[in-house]
Length: 251
Image (cartoon, rainbow, N blue to C red; front, side):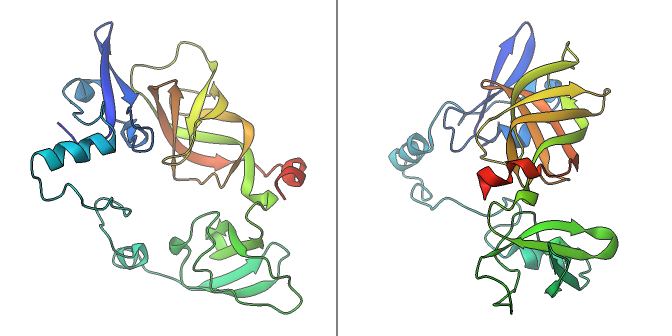
């Protein structure tokens, strides 16, 4: 038994992973790589309950944690600064922060501390000859240890409609069709995004989204769904060039 907010069902002798009833707490995104055999041995007591109902059950049974605030950190790290955790396992290396126009605007303490679309922690103050818009991380160039930034939460370089994913895992077997439409999430708690998946081989696929997606990030998981059913997922390996023709709608 596990405390994850997900559900399991049985169909044609196979265990299938479903989203939780509580959409705000659903954790199936994290479980797409669980093999069907392991899933068949797993039960999800919380999957059919809302968080409010779980709290009420805890209160009715006098559990001390019935009113405990929801945690916001990564479960195995706890409530502490993620930067401090990373610094214990990785060697940081300073490098330049460069604007999307190629101008050096600062210095970072390590690429590992930043993610695409990030605003806080860049350490860029008011710059001469620059407008007052907030700065966001647009790209991390590992080869030159360069952090590329731009102004505006909807900067066109943050958006793309195509990615390549590898290390695929399909919970109930590889899809029978080489190309199919479904929904996808490229981050936890993201709303379902309509897409078309085109299989390249057993390990990789192209994903084409109906709408531009913000901050698709290599190394993160993309998880595929058909309604509440979790089909499987993979690791984002490449993101296409940003689609500049979308910039007007998102500026």
